[in-house]
Length: 112
Length: 116
Image 1: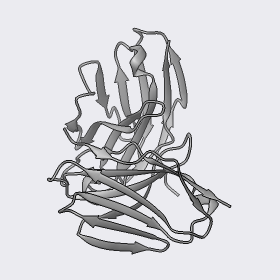
Image 2 (image 1 turned 90 degrees about the horizontal axis):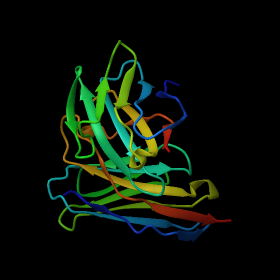
Image 3 (image 1 turned 30 degrees about the vertical axis):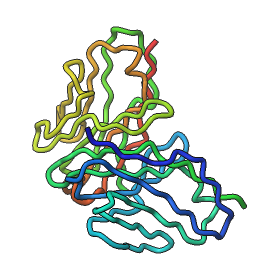
Image 4 (image 1 turned 180 degrees about the vertical axis):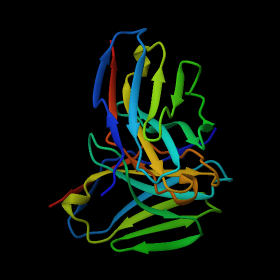
């Protein structure tokens, strides 16, 4: 059974600081890794995806992947109150129309 | 900007009744998905659909569920005999290429199903 684990939080971070979100996954066959943001009562929206070990940067966001440790993280630099949301980690084995396995999400609160 | 649209936004039904949730994916997308999220729980994959057939389905997607693309635009999820535990937000999603490869799933705003 594929499992994706996240600390549910809430994680409280001061405005302007770096928010660090972590995720572990159980399926060593996982190929693709995603971070989605979900505001309360809304649908998930994709922030970033990563396939290769290492870091991937996009604006204020950096995704980090370590397949040996089965660990994915998301760093948010210069956190803004609008970043307050639940961040969902999702993985899948890649290829075809595979469904994503989501974690339960980490609730992030950016304090002004 | 193109978007995935879902109807109804909220449906209340009695246990045992049939429900059809409708989705209009983004027009040039080829892959379609249904996910659900029980209140306070994680988003769960139900089914993926490509080339007019189911590509993958989860354990949740049992015989009471079915999907259909009755015409060139709509993608529907039918729940034949609803149970209390079917109460959830149901998200439709679509992607231009395999969602598993790019992760670029575009989600609709969801249909909240309440089973009484």
